[in-house]
Image (cartoon, rainbow, N blue to C red):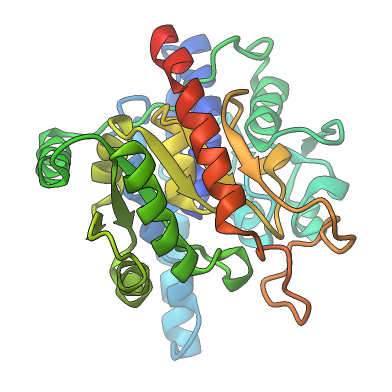
Length: 351
């Protein structure tokens, strides 16, 4: 069987789809699996031993400055690349017009996705031949597993959720160097996020690093991406203990670092989901998005969020004129960190 997985971006969305990949490969070991992803988000999929073919595309290149003739040629190139294999089924885990279009371009006779009400862009339903309805309040990982089962008949939800990620020696060496620089047990703090409304104040992360150092003796590794240096510097500038270190690892290098962390603290962003995949004890700080949908499935992990405001229901705002959902005190977050560290031995015992 030849299967096409379409999940283009972002990092967290791709991580949330990895358990479905694992379930498909486990149930269908002889299947040929191709995954189409945006090049900017594909790093976490490179070297994945469960994927036979990784196709990296750049839909952002189809906008901004391209003349019509160039755009047509680029679309044609992607179409030829996607159609190289005769797929039996294509599965759209994204639910966007562009991801739906990829399934249609693939030529697969069976093109599965979510029902119209559960698509991020409902008009993308026109590209699908079949759709699955998902019960309300379903975590996105389980939602993706349900879609895989509906499309391929691979069976019920697995008891253990597994995220297949395959770092190589360079990523492990990168992680070893970062961990050595920490000089002992460490926490990871991530002040970044794709939307400004997801950000907890960088100044509070600095104060939190001091509290973690004073109470638990942990160094805080402040993890950010290459374009977030200023954010990391604001965290360090507001830490008086000198026990905070800025790091900018690769995604798979970060995954290896996260495996050894005592605790991770961050919002709804890609590295948080990578840390969850790594089995790191998690404290999430969520505002415009929902922990029940995007957060950890580990019952010992903790989310700090506000229930005392009425504007968070189905919010998902990237900008907001009443931005109070992330107005959370350092005391509340530190209390959650203390609780999670206390319970972390339970996780270590199960591993």
